[in-house]
Length: 213
Image (cartoon, rainbow, N blue to C red; front, side):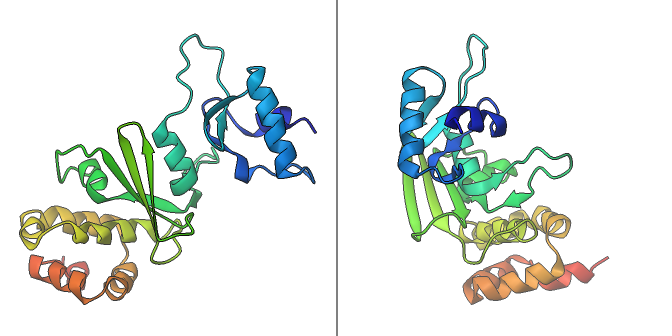
């Protein structure tokens, strides 16, 4: 089967295509790479960076794909485009100061994006794109659709001080109740260890908050 024709059936414009994810019958990886190299020369497909390709639309100023899109697709989630199931295959999440900025706990816009994911073999990897930096870390446990928000919540407490927690206590408790089950909260208390648990307790956040009316 023609590699580009096959990929067009699967990928939309501006969607990252990772070479190591392509499977076309018994066609070898080398044959797929050669097809993509020739197709790139003809302008049938575009190469963003090593191992990452995409299709452009016919719009005059189509920007292609961004660094953030590559990171999301590679390390955070697959969006299969199914109504109501946007995050059907979740395998990572944004953490660090980028996440604190997302939920409004800091106005600082960091140049570094921190991501925790299943999709990395080493414990840590740093990726650079011009002035942008992404630090990718391996997950403590396998991330899925039901636990990633709990891990994302607990990761905050590596950064937040006790005073930060006290100052934002009501917001954090409200966020916790809306996004994390009491079971996952208890599980994460054990997973993250005494240092994080003690810091949270000192800031006024405990499992007993779930029983308060």
